[in-house]
Image (cartoon, rainbow, N blue to C red; front, side):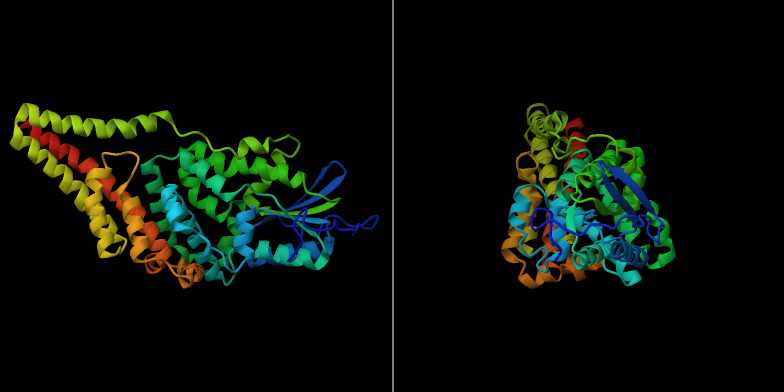
Length: 410
């Protein structure tokens, strides 16, 4: 394994006087200077054989002191360690309300892996090749990207519930089109990261999301690349980031600010409490103004709508029978308590009755290659239970309200 910055001796190799800087294969390559350092910025497609080959040849030809890669520590470990997701604590994921976020991350990985499999390459092969060849030439590895969990969390905070569903649906729809994608088309996608191209349509109407996913990372990458040690540095980034890195090259960036999670919106917190209060007030009004029978019918519709749709969500995720039952029982109660959700209860029950084994974590890479694999693998099935049960519970609330109002009106 190549040495990470700070974990090994500095490279002693110096480029000879007059050494050619511009690589022979200069496609999607930029030469930048900063504080007596020379940077060779290589824009790549993340599932491209051509990009992987270009990266390897440039590093071997240039023999840099340092190779920068578009990875954070967690993604670096995921790519280079065989255990990958085996240490994931699913109960912790559920308790910290990150099931939707992790499932979203898996969906993005799935899409990228499907394209890579279609072309006979590994996802991130150009990064793996960069790490391998850096080790060969004695260069350090410098991780230049922001933690993926911070990026996704900052993005997630800016997206509403329905926008998240829209984005997930768009990814699922796009996954069906993978079979028609040829390698030549992938090369054309070099003007944008594969994942970012999926989100681009949503980002057009949500500039805040585009800012976090693209602009903020351009700033982060620019600053981190400039901080790389050595006199000659090769930096490997998705081609979609090259214009942004150049744009911020001469500007100082506050990395700490870009690593902060924005506070949750006060309006959302108010709405989470306001809806249960209004539901309870509505039921109370039914008993007071329309009588005991009407009030009882309103309670019935509330319980039936929430229980049925939450149970349907758990069943759609192929949850254990006890998981489905727990979703049915929990939903009418948890929908009135913003501090807990039916999906969390169902997810914990699913972990208890269908706890993933090591083989399930080891099979994740293979299972993520197909949508069907999300239901087959116990790890992703648990996340589906949480997400689909919560979606069902939310729909149950919206279905119950008009039914209750109809009873009150009569």
